[in-house]
Length: 566
Figure 1: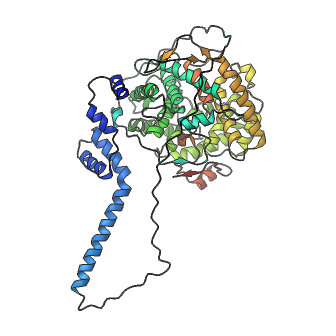
Figure 2 (figure 1 turned 90 degrees about the horizontal axis):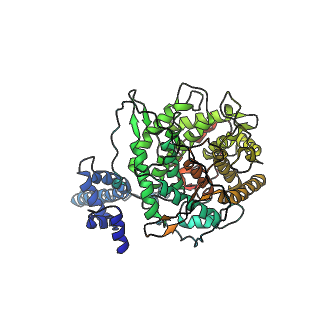
Figure 3 (figure 1 turned 45 degrees about the vertical axis):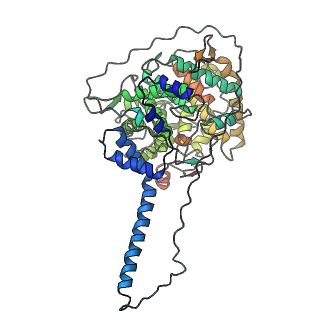
């Protein structure tokens, strides 16, 4: 009881205790039905109406079943009455049901998912590292002035969210973002994380919590929007969101909620009618990353606010695709430069949206065109390149490779060649040590993709031995250098109970990225690769694209390694 009172006090005074208690009640079917009909009579902009709409979608199947039975019973009663009235003048013929006319079987009720097991106890790991004092953080460049705008309709408040269990259950995924799975995937071993990697991740989450500004955003770089979106992705990767099953939900849940509210508020429409987001960088990379964060958040929470904004931003990404299937700076549909670095974030965003159940017009055609562009324009010789007319930055080989893997083309020749090209690369904070070449600054930007590529190839079912060994070697090096490179801070961050937690951050040796928030998030996401993959990033869940059409659009077959029950 005291914990509930503390929680109420955290969110401010004036909360209706009775109303709050009702939200946690497990209501019966008819109670929910009455609430639904009551809510449908409310104004369309009200919270009650929106929750009623969600409830209507969830109760559609049982309502149809009930109505069908009532109609059938009524028909039988009427038929019986008519038959009795005419029994004396009519002969009654009884029809024999043929053997092949079998009534459909009843759909078995889906058993509710078991409560996730509790993770094994995590020991605090003290890592003694002799690191130099970090230099001053580069000041954030001011965001460009926003033109006179016509702001879109303000989304509903967060209290309209209805948290429901996902209808998608993964069978063959390596892991998921639940406390039990996190514990299982950090038990140690060649392909997994361990107590030290998980301790490092938690340090970054507490550091991000402490660095969040009052409005919910994170600064300290060239793009406040990109930093905030990457931070949200980092918390979501650990299964942190409002009302999550995480033991840290009372500390990290409000952080994610504030950040999502801030991202949603950045949406606006310029004078030409183009959807944009404030606080972005000059090339609008942040627009893509923000879409990615909103789509993952919607996939995990079904928050209608995220859906409303994400649908608009996804539509712009689709319409901004080049005629040749790629993307260029500022989502310019007239350019055929096909920048792979830019396209990497666009494709991650679109894939996450598709897996979350968002299907704006043209999505499937857009993905099919992108696959063909990756195979024909972005691939050169034995690796992926920066753009179609520039054979620079071989570090982007990981970007093209991961895009094809996530889109279901992980067994194609281009992916196999790319994995072989990256075979001897190793994670590092110095470009010259990673092996990607001296013209590839910010090695953690490239490592972010390579870690996922090698994990996908080395941990999948029936993985080639060379890919399995390559992932284990990469993972061993990652576990060796990443925890040692974190910049631990002497001061600790307090949670809602007053307990103190260690914090730390990461920073590349160069000044290229939006340091240190971006660097910290990119490293943390790599250290959560073991359990990060959920329906939002699977290659099959929620799939609606015609696989035959996709195969025709891109050379070769569409091969998928994940089984899903929907």
